[in-house]
Every structure is written in structure tokens, then in C-alpha cells.
Image 1 (cartoon, helix red, strand yellow):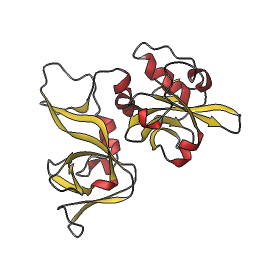
Image 2 (tube, rainbow, N blue to C red):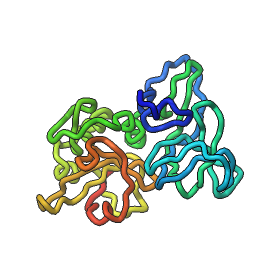
Image 3 (cartoon, rainbow, N blue to C red):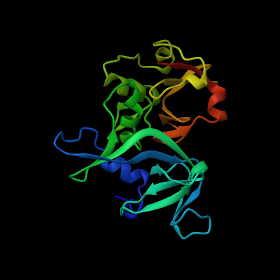
Length: 234
């Protein structure tokens, strides 16, 4: 575990390290909050005030456990020591996944594995290295292999390449209609074909195995990505 993961706030490394989807049936679950991801560099504060004591300076795209607060412009952040910090609401995207803790201390995401919960399950593989042609969710995998392997876990047998996968399933033609678990397909000019794919998480985010990021990671569906998004399938 890294030095960062030992600090008193939930970081991506800590969430991924303790992620357990198959929680024991006898363990009582407590919902800690929603999974959130910062959309910009920001600060976690002791109070809902810009000049309050700074608990931590978060980088963009870090994971947090967040809850609504009575303040319109602030969210609560659940710290590892049990306390709450505060973060500007516009600096965080709330993802559609509950983070739970059991009576025996295990933490994970509350979801049965189906199309809509695949993105939450996929988070356990954040950090898996990108390998061209790879099919190993832990040892190394490419974008289409990542999508194929995850959908295989719910009994959906997708083709191996992104361009072939883009022909399978119900087409989604409007960004506003995207739902968690939809597959996204992107054009690659260099090869003049669909050459990349990922899985939509909700709130504008998707997860993919990215050569540019060195492996499995999340990204915001920014203008850069929307310009080359050519298909979405459910």
C-alpha cells in the first residue's frame, strides 16, 4: 500500500485495494455514501467555508466517498477516520454507486453484477496495465479485451475487436440517453476505423483500458472524446 493510501481520506488506491463485491451474506452492510470523483484539483476542508482548515489537496480525477449536505454548494466527504470533510459540489462528479461497509470492516460497492453495475465492478481493475492484444484483467489487457472480458462475466459474448463490438446490441444515438453500462466506441483516424472502446459509468464518465494512461482508468467524456465518439451500444 502506498503512503498516500495511509492518509485519513479515501483515495483511489485505497478503494481499489479493499473493493469486495462478493461480501459475506452474514455481514450487515452500511452505506457510507456515493462514489465520487473530482473533476478538477480542489481541497477537502474541515468546514463548509473557503477559508476553513485544509484536510487535503485533491488532484483531478481522485475517488472519494461523498454525501449531500445541507449546504447547496458543498458536499460532505467521508474520511477514513470516520469524520466528515467538505468539498465544493461543482468540483466533484457523483457516480451512481453506493460505497458500503460491512460489520467486519470490508468495504465495497453495492451492486449485483449486471449491465448497469459492470462499471462499478470494473473499478477493481483500475491500474491493470495496457497490453496490446492482452486478455488478462489483472495482468494486462487492451480496450476491446477489457470490454469483452467484463461483459463475458454476465454471459454476453462480444467479438474481440472494437469495430466488431460496435455492431452488437441496441444503438444509442443521443448522449442524453446514455446509461451506466452502455458501451462507447471511438474513431481512430490513424487506422481509419473504430479503434477504441470503453464503458459508460454515468455522470459523464467512462472506464477503459487506455494506452495513453498506461492501463485501466476512468476519463471524463470531454469534447475531445465526444468528437471521436461514433457509436454507443446497450
